[in-house]
Length: 136
Image: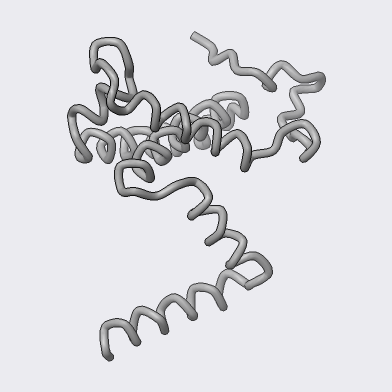
């Protein structure tokens, strides 16, 4: 069965969305609010409540499964499938953030902090901070 998601039925199969078409910060914040509102609900009626009811390990297991599905979709090279699987992974990561008392804004702030750094510089800075923290 093919994933049908808004935004994927675009002319020329162009999956790129401009900032004016979608604000990711707002979408993630709205989704985080929905997760918060459903996590204590009836596990028989809400997927979110069911995963929270099963505990952190169930959420973490789903993240592992979804990450594997992202890899497989990428290997298949089907762009709509990749987008769908990444959306599933992000959703389950939002569940994990909530479970550990974090919000999408925390991740977005970290990404903003890293913006403009080369990946190698950022990695070296993290390693240095970890060494300082460990007392090495």
